[in-house]
Structure formats: C-alpha cells, structure tokens
Length: 281
Image (cartoon, rainbow, N blue to C red; front, side):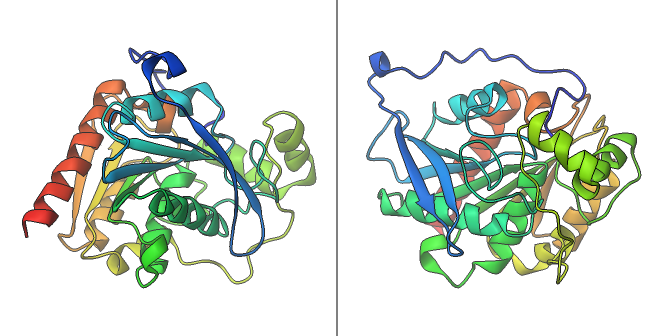
C-alpha cells in the first residue's frame, strides 16, 4: 500500500537527524510474543527526558529505512521521541507479512520498548496497513499496561478486509494471494508475504473501533486516496459513535507519501493536546 507515490508525493523540509544535532539514534532488535525478530530504531527527540513517544507503524511494503518513513519520523522527532520499526516480512525484520493480522504483535513489542525507555505516554500512528494495525492493537491490548497506547492515529486506513473496489487494491490482492504476486512482493517490493489465508479471520478495523474508547482516536484520510475511498474513514468514525475525530484532507492521496510535513505537524499537535487534556482531567 506504500510501494510508491499515490497522488502527490510530499517532500520534507525537515533536516535529517544526525549526531551533530545532539541526538543519537538507538537501534534494537525486538522480540515479539510469538518469537519474531523485529528491527526498531529510537530517536529521543528534542527532550530525552520527555514523557511522550510516537510509535510509527508503516504501510505495506515499507520499512523503517525507507525515505518516506524517515521523513515522517523526522517531523515527529521535532516534538517528541519517536520509535520506528519494520513489520515482520519487511526490511531486516524476520518472519513473513500477514498483511495486518500478526503485525499487532510487532506493534506491541515497539510500544513495550517505548515504555521500557521511560516514556509514560505512547501514541501509535499508523499509515495504510499500519493504520489498520494501530486500530486493532488499541482494541486488543487495552488490559496490558506495558503494551497499551494512550492515543491512536490511523492515517489512510482501511475500514474492512478484502476490499477490492479500486484498481490499486486489486493489484495488491494479486500480490498477496498469488504465488507469482508473492514472488514480485519478495524480489520487487522487498516484502516477504505469508502464503496461507487467515484462519481465523482477524477482527477488522471497523470492528475494533468501538473497543478503543475511552482512548483518544484520530482518523485521517485524503479525499483523493486511490486505494480506499472516503467511505472507509467515515465508517471508522461512525463506529466510534462520537469517540473519534475525523480529518478529511482535501487533495491528499495515500499514506506516508501523501502526508505533508504540515499535516504530520498537526497530527503531532493533536496528540500533544490530547495528552494535555487527559492530564488536566
């Protein structure tokens, strides 16, 4: 879902993170509950003692080293600590992609790492497939203190499984479900995909949303998204029954490639405001 620019590709005004800026990025190999090794990176942001950390969940065919993921992380790192990681089957992580199912365990490991580094508040931000994962993670990990999220932001996320209503999604289903497609995924898109169908079918994003409250939820979607039309974010917001904020972004395409620095900055400001409001309450 993030194999290339969908709509206008945004460029960054944020300088790359370097040691000369006084911030040293840490790298780690995390271990999920089912034993998969997941590569992760940590940037302490402008205040190493800060309470807030963003955990960024990339889209399908992304990984933590991709330029569009690093750009997004760089914007968030201007405000707070940031953890990026590669889902299973992506980048240097082990295992194979299950396209949104077991990836919840990868995200949980990243959230646990953020808390082990001393961050009292962790906000999960997911793009496309990662958007579906942050929704499902928030619903499924409410009772586990070390893996819970304090706010959820889903950008360009699908509402339901098996959607084939657009040409990009039909191509994606070919990549995931056909042997030839998985070959293309492995060697053309650098993504290793599990060959078996879901059994059982996991809780869908729209089924997950009612379970997230009272955790703050922000749904962000472009009105020119070529993968998922605007009925997807509207379904997600409606499922929250007033417990979610919906931003429909004019002219925006799909996921990280289409998210401008300005939009990511607004998302970061929303997360900070939700933390301030929760602390005041």
